[in-house]
Image (cartoon, rainbow, N blue to C red; front, side, top):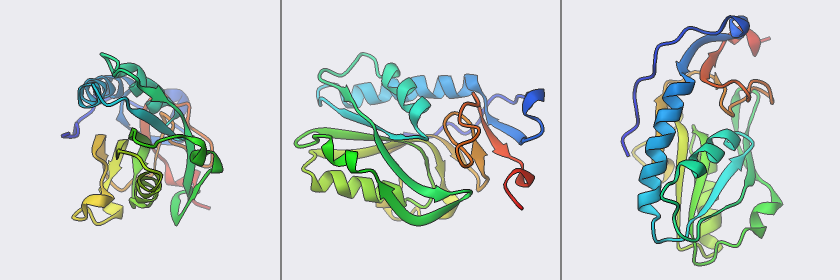
Length: 200
């Protein structure tokens, strides 16, 4: 469960230089870490018939890649999606909005793996874990691509993801599903957005 700390050092692509200050994790580094996580999660959930729940829209790419990397495929594994949001612009609002469709996912007596793009304050993590536990899940755990620890009390176990890809500093990051008001999700790496792109 240790997080990879380093990435390949790569320059910002010229077409992104107007918006991106630096590349934190390259496409290659992400792919390697997702493969590691997939193998670890496949072993953990081998006989547990997991329900894998990527949180839209930020975890769309990470969730898809991770589910495909969970090999050998755990018997009985299903993949659904849910939608939850706590960010407006660059800041967490502190209020987690979960879509009504989340209640339609049958998690009773199932082992749930919530897949998130980033854990910051831990609010979304706690909300979703409590929600699915109350719905009768046998267990609820979370894997996050990024763990941004500056925004929460990490000494409280419930605030932390069970697995994560990378630990990040307190910077506003975009790419590989992470966005700024819907933009930059499609960028293939994780990078730092230049402040002038979001500060008025």
